[in-house]
Structures are given as structure tokens and as C-alpha cells.
Image (spheres, rainbow, N blue to C red):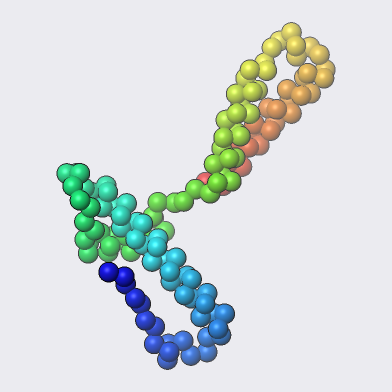
Length: 129
């Protein structure tokens, strides 16, 4: 059963065709986010493991969560890659630590660059969250 939402033309008076299209896309995106949040709430409350049933209350809770910006945040692919790079660089820096090799100035510079890159990626990934 598809849900069709109609907006009266009087409400769209003064909207350009581009603005109407952007409104349609924004409303569709909001509806998709609302459905995803309601399904997430239902999955959390469904203790019996039976067929999912999203109720009016769950949709209401999802609406409140989305309006207040409390919904499950979506992690971007770039942030995930940055967090993986931070972990890998920290691991590499730990594996590179060798007191005898650090006596060589070239190795020392490379080690310092790896440590600086690890610190930078951890800081950026933390700030982006």
C-alpha cells in the first residue's frame, strides 16, 4: 500500500519549479529517514522475534527523534576510512618503534612523520564525529 502525499498548489504559490523539485526530494528523504528510524525503534522493542509491526507510537517516537536530531547518525564512508587509517597508522607507529633503528636520522624522521600522521588522523576523526 503506497502512501501518496499531496501538497495543495496554494501552499506552493511563489515556488519556482526548481524549488518544487527540491521540496519533493527533501520530503522524500525525510520520509525515508522517518521510516528507517521507525523500523529501528521497532527492531529494538520487538523482544519476541516475531513479524515486525511498526505502530503509531513508534512513528511518533521516530518523528520526535528526527526533529530533535537524536536519530541514529549515519556515518559517512570517508569517516570510516579515516578511522581505519588512524588505527592502522597507530599500529604502524607502534611496530616501527625500535631504539636501535631510531638512532638513524632517516628512520627517525620517517618514524616522526608516521606518529604525526597517526595523531592527525585520530584528531580529525574525533572532531568529525
